[in-house]
Image 1 (cartoon, one colour):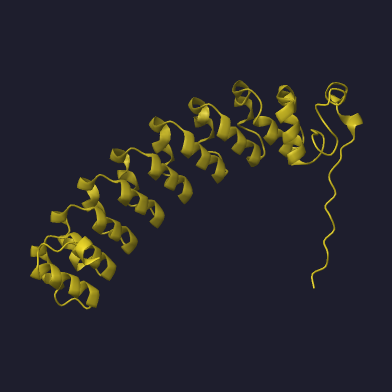
Image 2 (tube, helix red, strand yellow; image 1 turned 135 degrees about the vertical axis):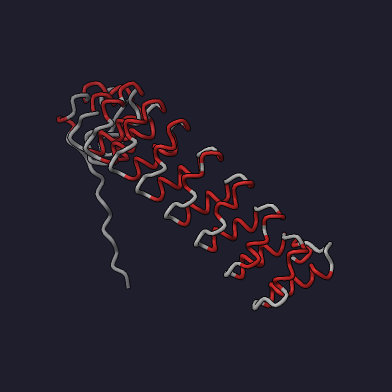
Length: 254
């Protein structure tokens, strides 16, 4: 039987330590234990700034990292540049989320991956390729999702499978042959789904049966004879059906 858990006490700060108490408390714009900038409670601090955003600037250099991170959400954008070098990564993440796009280059080499992911998600396309060589796969994945199709080539041989899958899904059809020797069958299956019919013949000899099957669904029937003795029953059956009746398509088979 589970022991009953003790209710968590609501943090209540000492109002005498707050420089704004004579304004906010008397005006009902704060409340101990609920809407309070001095409590070490993210919810209370956020409620305080939501009601009193004009005081956020005064806390940008506060000793408590969470107070600074929440203040960043409420200050005018022009005040954010001086926060890009904050020692705490959570603060810098909040900065990256709000910093004007034209100033995001300041955070492109930030040591925190979440900061760089946010930068990759927001930075102008003219600068995005500078993150294509990032050490973190998720940063590169974000780049692969946003880069214009014609600039995806440098990610064709990326070390990460998921990045290459996104590239295979977005690369112009005429360029898909550049990935035909990709080591991952998951990537080659994407190629089998997207390549032009006349370019699918090499994938009919792939060592992954799902790649062969996917290619056989769309390939020119004249190329399917190589699959009539395929070791995989479903691949053989599909090839034979399409050879016997060229009007059969992958959709018909399904």
